Image: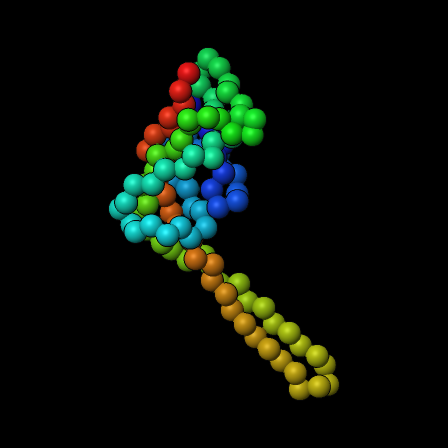
Length: 105
């Protein structure tokens, strides 16, 4: 069984037991969270597609930790003007483990 779920504006294909990295969520590590924006669920014998969401379907997950992505460096340069600007950015992320996919019917 797998599902397509919308988390923080992005769509993820998840299965039970998967570890997924999503944009930073406001939840402490070790807490359980639920996502109700389920777009599609596939079981062994049928496919349920929402229009746009499946009513009463949800994904139950547990927050593992809050890592940060690899550093992205930006560099601006204008020749012969003594102009150089260097910036770095690390995107905050949340790693979750999908515990259960709940789909009524």
